[in-house]
Length: 142
Image 1: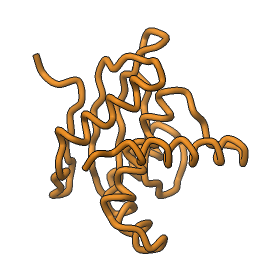
Image 2: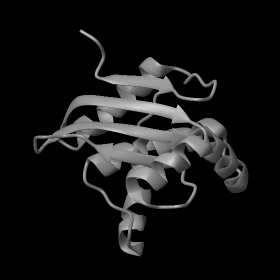
Image 3: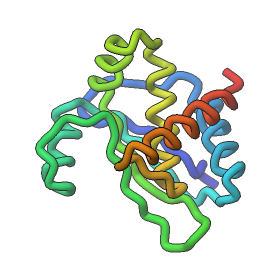
């Protein structure tokens, strides 16, 4: 059986370090929230690629670091496609004085948290999202 979490890159050269450990960590976070992982696909790409998706599917003409598409049919299951701009991750890590891997992992889990039902549109939601990200990041064993 293929693994329920897959990592791809589109229009850039990028390979995730420790994909098996990252997958285990993501599954741990999902399980801690009492949900079941069905299928999760990460697509690492460029700013341009993600910008096109943002315009075409969300009608947002802005750069972003992540776009999450929820494909789950059943309540309590996690299934989706998560597009992440490696360009944005590099810039944000530099701007925040954070290591690239830490910023990447924060964004990776941010997408999962959206699929788990967390939002970040209001200030209150943003604060809760950040707490969930920090809590999730603390579970990494790599």
